[in-house]
Length: 76
Length: 122
Image 1: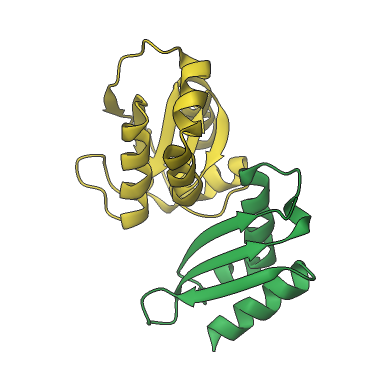
Image 2: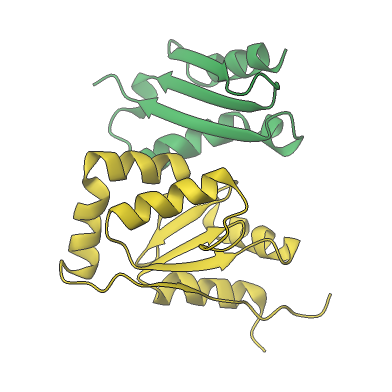
């Protein structure tokens, strides 16, 4: 299931992060991810989102993820 | 004729607020493009829109420049602000309006226009 793959990749990229992945439409390719991680502390939103996009680059490139909504938060 | 990449760079660098979307402001072809446009409009942004759909090379060149993988992409005074999620978040928190006030002044004309890129022969 893509939801599980996404969760795993995010947890690997952001160890210790609070990760949630929601299949927004039930179709298995539109996702909302929320990541709360100390990796984001001190970074601007755009830098935070760039890290998430990079962590999921493979799944975005191969079409597993058709649409991705991102919410990020630092822990500081 | 300048290259596609140069034209894109020109729009990003010279327009107060440039947004690259699927479709047009009158007829956005994607819900995320619509979300970004609405958030910009609510924050009082002038909008210069570029439709990326006419040619796949537009998106390729844009992403090569911005290092941002998805559409829409919003730029204020040449700086990438983000996609639909960040633009909505900054609109909701009031930070987008604040940023626009600082970058463009409080007294600004809120116009919407579109720019068509000249496509080089394939």
